[in-house]
Amino acid sequence: MRVGVVGLGMAGSLMVSVIAQHPCCTLAAVAEPYARLRERFVRDHAVPASADIVGVLERDDVDAVYIATPHQFHREHTELAARHGKHVVVEKPMALSLDDCDAMIDAAARHRVTMIVGHTHSFDPAVRAMRGAIESGEYGAFMMAASWNYTDFLYRPRRPEELDTSKGGGILFNQIPHQIDTVRYLNRARLRSVRAATGRFDPARPTEGACAVFLDFADGSCATLNYSGYDRFDSDELHGWVSEGGYPKRAAHGSTRRAWEGFASATAEAAARSERYGYGGPAALSAQTPPHQPHFGVMVVSCEHADLRQSVDGVSVYTRDGVREIALPKLGGRPGRSDVLDELWLAVRGGVAPVHDGQFARGTVEASLAILRSARERREVML
Image 1 (tube, rainbow, N blue to C red):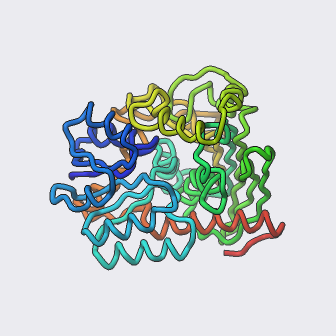
Image 2: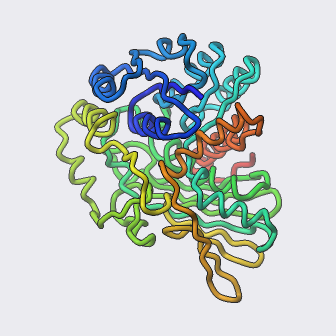
């Protein structure tokens, strides 16, 4: 399958390498408005690069596009891709409103193209192994989940809109969807209601940077989600100092915030965001195969007869007989990221209905919006 990438920021630049390494996909074209990132890309690849999405969509040698543009453009770019007959993978969040989600779902259906929303950590091999274990029935039904993540998210270099909740800034549209998606992927019951509290702990970063959430499912099961992005405690300490991507790391409490304090202005910070994290930048996500499994903080799933936890290299299963490990094979590429392409290829070429389709992603957007509403109104929100 010939895939174009729209946006060469952090997510898009990583997917360039993931696509190039995938056995069933070929990198066909890219689009990026920032000239510096396009120049870096052209230096490394003999692949067409244009300044806007139209330059990719008008090509006959592109079958699908990976849309990694800012959140506010997801609807426009998805509808445009569908009108051009291109299959779509769009980064999370799918959109910032349910009306936009519905329009994207309608566009894909009307033009008979496949739409998948990802990457989120629900694509991780360990999470998929957990789902397989739950669906086998060996441990009984899903009963409860607890997901924790404490990171430096809020002090990484940001563009101004990334600190504006109304434009999709903060953790509720960027980080919490990983947790919501993962719990909903593991528990097939309908999400019934949300009760949440959110925190804005630093006036200089005027968006939600922390939250505590209770998810109530229609079958009586539940989940709790905790997240803080204020660069104090780092929950990777509880995961053997293995990073989100599966690479070894060292403790560096507060270092991201201290570096942020060195920016002279919001303009300088926004420029650093593109230069450091965009294609070819020193902080761009690595395309090298990690030595361990990716993860998103610490998650424990309780079934009727066992507790399951993501471990460094697989899944730990705790029962009355003790603990055992489900080891996962170490595959090439970027686990989780390449799984997005697997799901796309199976849907388009194999006719397998994708799990992470528009309706599934709409449910996660609905939950994110409900968290925001619940926190503001200090009450349970029914879905």
